[in-house]
Image 1 (cartoon, rainbow, N blue to C red):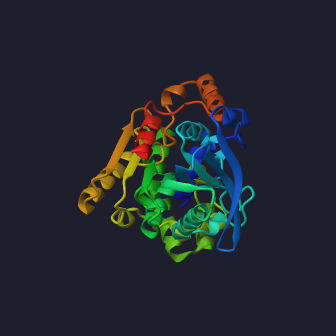
Image 2 (image 1 turned 60 degrees about the vertical axis):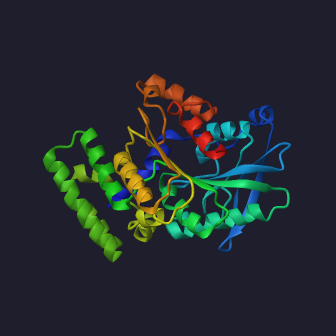
Image 3 (image 1 turned 90 degrees about the vertical axis):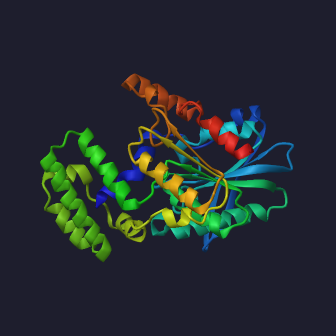
Length: 345
């Protein structure tokens, strides 16, 4: 069932690489105060970064909730442009290394989505207990898998003002099937090969339900090479993480959200079925009467909401990576404006 294990990591592995710290000259130009912070959760010391706009006593604060994978506080540079634009508007931000990543203790592979939600609550408590910060808004920005986390936090904390869902999936297993089918089609697998991959996938789900890593591994080793190429073997730690989380589904948590919501998606999302997510979000919020829900499907945008027009050739992709890591805008036109409008209104 490795199809599900790679789906949310892949885009960040491909798109965000290299940067490990913010640019001091940029911070000076836009007059922000960035500091390294730490707080405790469940016995583990977690370390990250917090910015406070200069000359402001009270300000909105965006808390970034990572997607899948071993994400550090900077998401390997992916957040840099967003942070710069938030800072220009006097908006603070908070992000931290996942458990076991960078300077944080613990192991993110041991966490459920509920565990991650309680960790975000600890971050909120840390901010609220600081005497030098008076936040008038706390906005949760859940990226990819983070979309399964932030509605849980919203139910548990009255301090959360609003939510931003970026490329959020509805259901873990359906997302995995969507991602895998699209991948197989793009790689030119035949109908017969795709059918065999689907049979392998269904067997993997059965092994997950029994939490039988040995059966999963033995079955993988019996597969033809094209199946192994499509899925690859995951290690036992990742297996444990998936066993804890593969039944994730966003609908019941969305039903409890009564705060302003912005959901943003790309129509070229290679990981998530954006059309399904948009339909489920719309219908759920209509049903629960949340009239503050807004969504936007960005044209020619990937799972990471990067403009695909900047990725047409190898040379263009190389230039795009360079711009991303410098904190320049490589995202879908209008994305940052949509986000800032949501935060400020």
